[in-house]
Length: 144
Image (cartoon, rainbow, N blue to C red; front, side, top):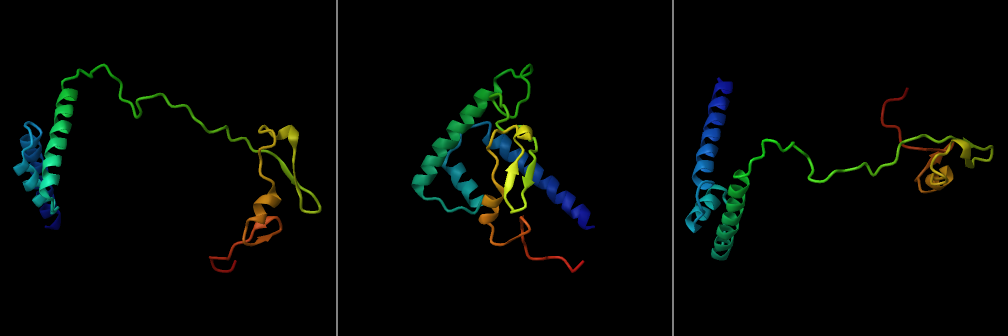
């Protein structure tokens, strides 16, 4: 029974939104419309805000009407109006060797980034705790 009630409520909401859209998007907003909408949204507006919102929403509504007049059948759907290229570099792992004294050395023959890798000791220096050239963190799972 709960599923049916939920479905009926959703259908009513869809119909209300459809009625609202047909009423408000097909004509200009009045101050009374803004006051009515603010009551529905439980927002208290001052008189100057009602005047400003009336003007702003009418401008938005006119812009939408102009856009709806355009023929966009042959325009491909895009996520961005400009072509985007990846600004990230290719992820190629470099070989890092740890010397006997705990210092890191990058194998330059396998390093495609020409020295822009962080040194292990520099990274671990900022860590609160390190052990065996690795970050040491508190154990969070049961003992294994």
